[in-house]
Length: 372
Image (cartoon, rainbow, N blue to C red):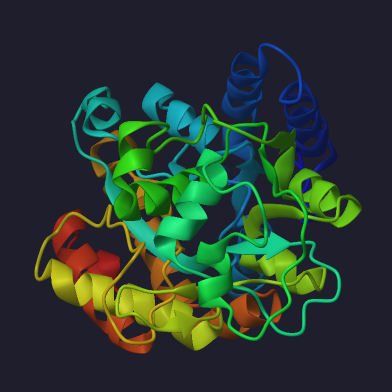
C-alpha cells in the first residue's frame, strides 16, 4: 500500500493544504518535524487528531468518515507509519496514535504520565507468498522450515525438509530467492515476532524488529515492492499483509500452527488466534498482546492486532471519553465496513470483554463514557 497516502475525507481547503504539505514532507528527510508542525496547525480544525500505522488507514478513513456523518464528530488521521504515530504521541502533537508494533516500556516512560492504553481495533495477518509455477496445490510450510528459508539455511525448493511437508507435490529444482521489506514496517515486526517465537536461531540472530538486518535476500519497499519482486522472479518467496495478498490474488502458503495443523489465513483462523491468545492471557490489563503462534487447533500463526494508542492524562477526560465512544461505535457498528475492505473485526466475545476493561482503565464517569 502507498507509504504516504492522502486523506480522502472532504476537509476545509486550509486543512487540506496543511495536511498535504505535511504528508508530502513525510516522504523526505525531516518528515517528523514537518508533520508535527502541520499537526499543531491543524488541531483546531478537527475534534480529534491522530497519526500512525499505514496498515489500518483505508479502514480508519472509512470509519472516521462514516462516524462523522452519523455523529458530527470529526476525526482526522495522518497515515505516517507506526513509528511516526508513536513519536507524535510522545511529543503530544496528536490526540491518539496508531501502531502495528506495541510501544515498549521505554517509549511509554517518555509519556509524562507514564501510561498509554493500547486499544485493539482490528485483526490482521501476514502471509507467505511465493512464485512456484506449476505447483499442484498450496505450499505447506512448518515453522522451522520457514525460519530456515529466511535465514538462508534452506537454499533449494526441492530440499528434503520441504518435500516431506508436501508429499506428492513436484517441487521445482531451483534456488530459493528470498524477498523481504527494505523499509521499516509493522508487517516486518509481526513476521519477525513470529520467527523469533518459533526459531531459537532467529531469536538469537535477527530477532524481532520493524527494521531487520536480513541474513539473505532482496529488498522491496512496502508490500507492493515485495509482491512485485515475487511476481517477477520464479523461485521467489516473500511475506505480505493478508489483505494485500487477497486483493492481488497472490498464492499463499498453508502454515503449521502450534497445534500441528496446517491452516490458511481465513477470517475464522485469524479470529481464532486472537481468542486463543487472550484466553491464555487471563485478566491481564496490558493489551500489548502478541498473538503469533497462538494456541488453538485452528489458530493462524502469523496474526496480529493493530492498536490505537491513548494517553488519557495527556488529552483530558473530554477527549478520552470521545475516543472511547468512537471505539465503542467502531467495534459494534464498524465490523461490516471492516469486512468489506478485507480486514477481520475482533470476535464478538473479545469485544464484550474488551470494552468493560477499557472503561475501567480509562476511569471515565458513567455518563461521559456511554456511547451517544
